[in-house]
Image (cartoon, rainbow, N blue to C red; front, side, top):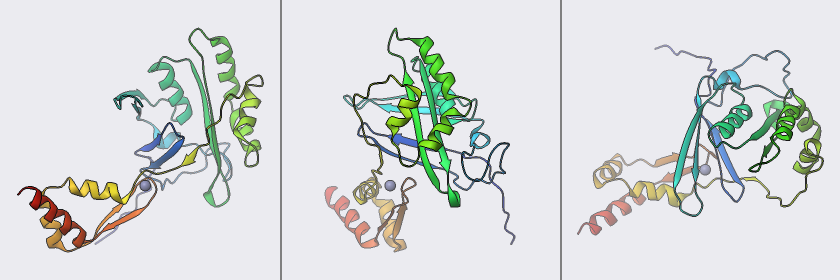
Length: 238
Ligand SMILES: [Zn+2]
């Protein structure tokens, strides 16, 4: 038997979601990318993901808070830079004049030193010439430079003031990583299985292990707990 080691250079999927409360989470399908340093890059600082993300598409799913209805739209990935392609999506699909820059700064030991983004959108009949000027000021590495100099001791407001000196801060929503997985949700998904599948799982007499892709939490369901679900299903069927 021989093992084959393949150097992977595609991300396959980069997933992120956010709630109105400012809870964020996400994962990379292939987190073990092997890249050389590209021109102008150093071990510490900004690293491009573009070669890992092209070709592909950005698919955005939104849930309306009031109705719970989902809408989905898709645009192609062209540059491979997440902010530029998302900016294209917002301009193209949402038809909202948008300037967006976001970046991640890598620190010692390949750990994330800091990350930040700036999204500027024009109101209906807003000043799109100013928006173009803001977009131009975010490009060419200036946003990354500012982000690096602002981290880690200053706030997002400093970033806003850097690019929009006349901006008024009306409100602030702290963002935090927050996964919504739970043992309850794992049990609910097992309850969706039919009695035949459950009987097979009881017969196998192994723990069922569910790993969350987003936060790496590990949930273990024992055969005894599966047997209880099975019995409840049988009783419910009369
Ligand atoms: Zn989770």
